[in-house]
Amino acid sequence: MTDRPQGTVEKGGTDVYAIAVLGGGSFGTALADISATNGHRVKLWMRDAGQVRSINNDHVNTRYLPDFRIHRAVSASIDLSAVVSDADIVFIAIPSKSFREVVKKTNGLLGGKIVISTTKGIEPVTFDLMSQILVEELEHPRIGVLSGPNLAAEIVARALTATVIASDDEDLCQTVQSVLHCDYFRVYSNTDVYGVELAGALKNIYAIVCGMGAALGMGENTQSMLITRSLAEMSRFAVRLGANPMTFLGLAGVGDLVATCTSDLSRNFRVGYALGQGCSLDEAEARLGQVAEGVNTLKQVKQKADQLGVYMPLVEGLYSIIFEGHAIGALVKGMMLREQKTDVEFMSR
Image 1: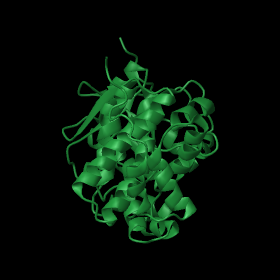
Image 2: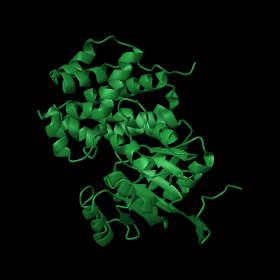
Image 3: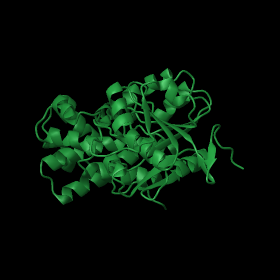
């Protein structure tokens, strides 16, 4: 028999968990809403006291999801310790640059709990993914990663959505599936934690590329080329680092890539679109008003690819545009002059 997390209670034959969500952005708010809708006790940690009042009094995240009402049972707070202290499950949905800092501030309160990262980014300097930070900073946590084509505005609008919970802990996967599964949100499992997490981080780079292409009026042929070559490039890089190539054929790979490369709900796509319209990087990020992880990820991946000698022409091209001042039009044209490698690199024999 599987042991339930301490503090879990039963309601009508169904386990009810104490859920903590760290991060009051769009996806953290969406997870809090789903969990509360499913009958769990939910606390949401946010840095901004005004946003906390808006959630608690008006049940609206006015900054990130102003058009949607959040479940009334979601309780927001700026007190990090109070939010996590009695939680069974902790979802962390904060930008990668703040991830380690916030985890440290929990002061040992996450030890032994189920801790799920939803952050799709890479830590500067260390090249650590968020699950690796959790391993380094926590004592005896049960760690998982949640990733997939999960545009938050569609989730809170209750459009049919699917995601992936990745962990080598089967009981953890089943628990998270039970907490989040509902008639509009499906949760599939995967044991390739590194591959799922890396796919979520890498696709942000290519969403910027596709956003730029959309601003420049690229056709469907060009868009399909960019997306498929992006998939080949990101999987080539990830497999070199130890990921399973098959992971990139699922929701966390091609699913997330397609969603973020084609939707103006994607923050990274919108940054790319603004760049394609002639904005500077600072102007594009200011227009967005949110963190776009792809710019930071681009820096880290370009450096690592150079170290490993991994062929990544789209990463090289985007880096040259954003950080070296090269012309945007050179990106796609440059692809056509590159060495023509194989179409599908990881094939069953």
